[in-house]
Image (cartoon, rainbow, N blue to C red; front, side):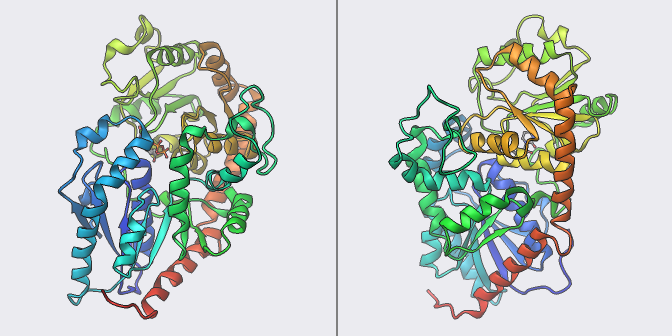
Length: 462
Ligand code: UDP
């Protein structure tokens, strides 16, 4: 990654959240800012931490005395509980780290212009204020979900909750084209309200891993509901640098790529449900037989803890499944996803529609089957299937016939071909928005000026 000639002589501190889907875009943002001339400091927990050798241009400060072990972190299955626990555990250690970093500041080093944090951390903004450090938020997910979360109090007032499960197709008139089935369950509302409150406290700016051509109308809605917060849609962040932020870079994936090389163009369905989602044994068996019955080649990521939170071994596969798919199915515990999606043999992605997976698929022009699990995934699914029409969603409980049928619709039928054409056009837009004069290119320039303006403003010292 090249740093621009005109070094900007100031440092930006980034504080990623340890969920991989949050760490990766923050590191990619680091690459983007580095390319603009900023020096980058990363304050990281040791949970899921990235390999600093992959980022020789960044300075890493690790919160070594982790109040939560990696094993304990990995065993937590409920995302909202995990987020709450991380927030109570890391507030003090983060303050100490920021203190150390700001001590360096007074040591004739380049000044620190701001902190960029993930709003999942509910204390980072407060701590930055204690240090009189300007702060910006990085929204790692899509904007439609944010708009919906922000509207939840209104939607509650309008009587959408408790959810009318007998009428899932009813429109949510306040946020077209949202339907009742897309709304977040009530169990998550308290946690979502906390995230929204934190995000809205970042008055100086909101950086978003999206681009105008992808979420234009939701960008407008965001600006209407938060008129005082400047927003910088500078995505797709992973396209700023060829530096791979994949934490498992060292694993040998050459035999998998060799297998992909033997497959026909656009013939392989890539199946992966991200880094957090979990299913039970019955669902796993339905997926397995759906894949087998579709008769399409597939590459399936069966990650450790995917099934009932257990370590994966061959015993979890239904009887005869592995023999049935021999030669046609390839199973791994982790895939270099962006490389896989860019492979010419891959013609479809069965995804949980995490935002990173969604935007990575769009950037490579790969249409999707959407199986949302929690959080923003339902809203991302709506965006992919109903707004962009580049994917289809599985509507019912996981069931092998429906899966088989969805795979064939996407991979061999006309419907899938049309989606492939639509997503190819979006791929072009994802590419051109980063080129000189493109929407994200301009937003990145504005963000750079904004960050530099913090240095000119008089900053009271602690
Ligand atoms: N990922 C990967 N290989 C895998 C599974 C996931 O590289 O086998 C990466 C994927 O490319 C994406 C991230 O992990 O960048 C998952 O983020 P996403 O927002 O899609 O979902 P989450 O894991 O946060 O639910």
